Each structure stands twice: as C-alpha cells, then as structure tokens.
Length: 458
Image (tube, rainbow, N blue to C red; front, side):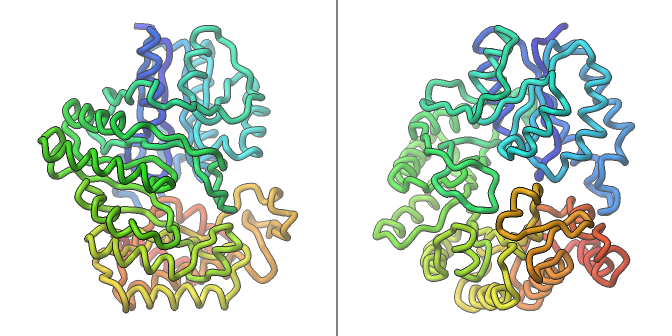
C-alpha cells in the first residue's frame, strides 16, 4: 500500500512518545490522507538499553538502522516526515539515519520539523545541505496538510503559530499504543531564558474541558493513566491551571477518569501568591505526582544572568507546599553556565545542602542535567564566549575541564548527603563530556565511567 506520508521519530532524550507526530497524524487523517508513524527513538533506546556508555553512538547500529529502513519500504511513502528534537544527536542522525534514508528513497520528498529548528544556525545549515527538503518550524498541523495538498512550502516562513488549539483533533497514538502518553494544555512560553532554544511567544491555552476529554479518550482507547504534559510551563496562568484541576477532580469523582491518574508537568517558580497552597493541594488531588522545576543554579546572580528572576526564597516557598502534598520535585541544574564563577558554584552546593536540611527530601530529586552546552558558539561571541579549538568553549576561566569537575562535585555531594538525583543526559555523556581531550584518558574519565557503571542514577 502506498502511504501519503511516513513520519519517523528520530532519537532524542527519553524513551517516550512525542505528541507532535501524533497531532500531525490526527490532522492528516482528518483531511483524508494516509499516515504511518515509526518511532526510531523507541527502537534505538531498546537497542542501547543494556549497552555501556561507549556504545551509545549510532555508528554501532548501522545494521539495525538498515533493517528499519527496509521496514519503511513496504509503505512506499510519497513523503517522509522527520521529527528532530534534540541537537546533541544531530551529527550522528545526519550520517547514520537521514543520509541512508535519502539514498533509499530517491523518489520521496522529505518534510522535517522539531525543536532543533528553533535554532537559527541549525535551520540554515540544514536547508543549505538539504535544499529540496521542506522545513516547518513551530506548529505543523496546517503546514503538513498544505504540503500534502499542494506540494508547496516556503522554508523562509518563520515560526508557525496556531491560535485556537481547540479546533484541532486529539493526537492519534495508534502506531505506538504501549508508551507513556503526552498531552498539551498550552503552547508557547512567556519567559526568555538565555540558555533555552524554545522561542519566546505568547502562551495559547486549550480549554480545560477539551484537555480533560482528551485524557478520557486516551485512557479508554489505550488503557493508559499516566501522562506527561508537554507545556513549557503549565502554571504560566495559575487561574487556568486551577480550572483544569477542578475539572479533573470532578471527572474522577464521577468515575470518568481513573483514581490512579498520574500526571507529570513542567512548572515555573513565581513569587508567593495567596492561592498557591490551594492550587498545589488541588494538583495533588487531580493526580499530579511529579513536577519539573528549573532551579538551574543555587546562585541568584547566575539565575538573573540566565534571565530567570527567581530568588531562593521563592523556591523555598514553592517547595514547602509541594513536599507537603507529596509531589515529587525534579530540580533541573545547569552546571557551569558561562558566567558561573567558582563562588557561584559554591552557592549551588550550599543550597543543595540547605534543601536536604530543611525539606522532606523524599520528594526532592536533583536533575543534574549536564554541563552547560553551547551548540552554536559563534552566536555567543558577542558576550565573550569563544571556542577552545577542541569541540567546546571557554569564557574567561570557565573551561570544559572546570565545568566537568563541577558537575562531578554535584554528583559527589548528592551521594554524600543522600540527596536523590537523576541524569536525563545519561546516554549522551560519553560524547558530550568524556571524549573531550581534557577529560579523555584522565582520572575524571575513570571516575565518571565508574559512577555510571555503578548505576547511581535513579
């Protein structure tokens, strides 16, 4: 059977569904076209699950990738869609996935999108190297239908923004029913963090009823009761978040949603508000079990330089009510932000100790992330960041080696004070940290490998 389009989810950070391709498929089918989603992210995670960190590179899986390409041939697609959502994989993906796809599907046209294309340099480089590909940035529902209808698209179009999200169908997860599901309440982000590639834009919300109906539909159709909200910040409008919680609680009372509903979301830390305690309590009743917070640093100075005007007092206030409601808090850290000094870093260590001493840390997990990575070093030249000539960057005395040493110290402190931590970049560490000439072959490499092999990350 010839399909109009096959959408491939390329590797990113976690083994979970992406909502973007599922939303595209739903809208494609609504307009009378055929679509198949193939999740190479899931496939590659299944392959590398039990591999050591040295073998978490796509070059070790060319045989498997060749078989996956053969699988696509049965669909004989007119278009191939590529969802590319993490730049740390991009070099490997181009060489071992996209190039073989192009060579095997000379008569198919390619449509690409994903958060990587929010980065201007990445977009321009991709278009230069793949001039025949259609590149869609931002909301893709209307764009993909236009391409299928007219075989036209202007790659110079900037950010695509859909204003009324309720007008579009719920995501179609029929090609990947076994994975944890993602759901969206809002798109856009009001903040403009200096390290983030998500573009600043107005926040557009779906109606709470529309979201809850989708929860019900996915629960009944796929028997899934765990969801991750894709919102950049689910509480950017606290009134709307409270409305959503009220409706979910009511549906649970009416047995329209399961009592064991498990919700995960990303949140912003605002200044104190008199309704915060009430909202956090309602979040717990609605089923929110875990939230991700951008702590980023224990230094208020560094946060300000990141364009995050949040004080430690603000975080303490928020952590108090979240831990009282037994909601897990994943505090994201960025070690070695370009302006971070040793004094700033010591403030981070001090604040982690403060968390351990003053809160129920059964519910606080430090998401240690990785060292501060700058993908397009030239774009930071105006602030004094320069290349070190070895694949990383330098700012004053902030070198790759300094950042790695600080990152290891965070791990060692968490172990020392028994503060739980995770690392979402676990499978990327070998390329991003260890292979740098200042680390490769040193005691740091051995220490990091030993930590990873002992499976200290929860």
